[in-house]
Length: 263
Image 1 (cartoon, one colour):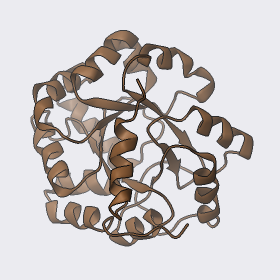
Image 2: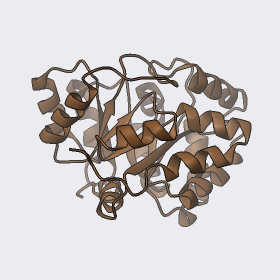
Image 3: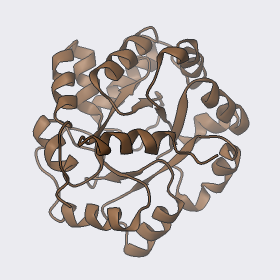
Image 4: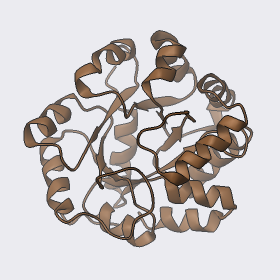
């Protein structure tokens, strides 16, 4: 398997002059019955792929908005196994690749091979595991061998050149370029030197580079999108769904259209 599904979805956006917009949602926020409705709305609105977060009791990368969404989902009894079964129930209606964002413990509890098989059965073509460093990723990669499921790597702003090169060499699907030093959440500005950082990542990588963390306005989508192959937006999407503010979501996605890279 070439693990091309997620990458091709991003490249298709770029080929038509758009930047890939990947929204993050918390599965089960508002009840598991909202998952299908939210995914199909994002698909119709123009998302290139959709990142589906799994509620977890001890997140390390999540800011307040996503933590609270996870707590609401946990209160509803949402688990990784229930999310996978729900995704499988409407797989035929989903035309964009889904990417699961979860931590390592739920995957280990699920079982590596079972997780890989159920991803294939649920339209999941990527996994993001923030607490799984590159050096320890072999265990999960071996379970995903022979599937079209990409193990997506994160790169921080503080990563030195040799680590960037190592991650780029192992990258599948896309590189998740973390745009802030810290956790997820809405921000007014970004670190000086971010443009150079993204340029280095793009030069080193054979897969697309998507910018994520802190991107929350149409202006952010345009400015960060111009420096990368696309953007990932989490807290602003989670808040908008929680508040029933669908027009804001459409406005954010529309901001990724008809962009020309500055690099």
